[in-house]
Image 1 (cartoon, one colour):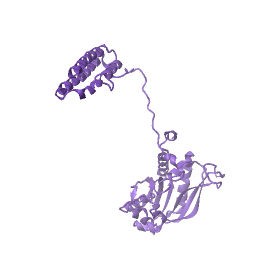
Image 2: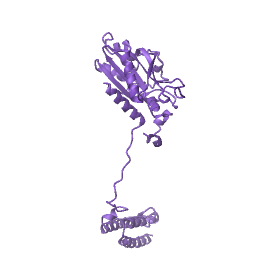
Image 3: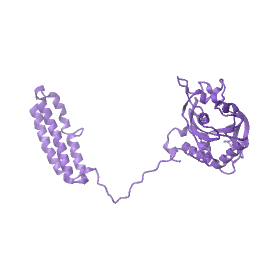
Image 4: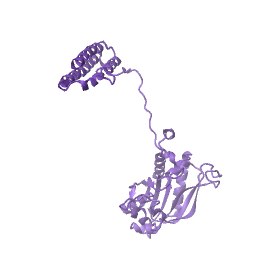
Length: 339
């Protein structure tokens, strides 16, 4: 059996030298390599014979196999050197051809909206602040004057960790951290991701993005809040958009309001999107509750402020006429490349 194997390897070795010596291109060199040592190569095909060779003859057989494979590698390198640089790749490079332009990536629509909102508020004198997504109950609820029985505290609505921390439910936590870290005057916006237990559908998801604003200074009034929101509406959606404020309740502001923008789809005339009302509910806002200021050691007798918060996805859906919230997180290139 050993003699039979050695005889076949000798014949293959002679063919190896002849094949590589005759190769005149990189493709022919590669084909020769596959012919001898590829998955179905002639040397590879002899491997099953090793199992039939007596134990005392296996060292000699293994040595012959290794020598045959080494010969293939040696002859291949010699052939490449003989053919020169053009044999180092499957095809030669034509340096006269123009370079290939790689397509540029684009921003996600949510990111575009965040950047645009921040740019608008920066022009009004606000700075951008950020905070962690994993928060304490104190920063997320207690210091924001949320009562112990507030629905948002329920584990059915909020993601809690075993140590008592939670995934923030709004970026108002950044406002608390900012007021604890610095004294007024304060003028910030805080964009970021928030989390709530919800069933995903066309208008809801377990995570979403918010941008909230806070302005604390002396003699701040509702007029300052309304003018700020009106300026934002005109910058973001275009001139002609009007706003209205409706009384509402939020534990962290007093007085509080829901702020509507005139429908950007129909110009306030009434359509399916605005349910024929001419208005779109965009955000919640109000004057900072004195209890919130006391919780962060700011004297409400000296300082006043306003706060507001709006959903980034909602703004994006309205601006770009997007009908399903889930498109933002499905990573469908057909959708994303439009932006």
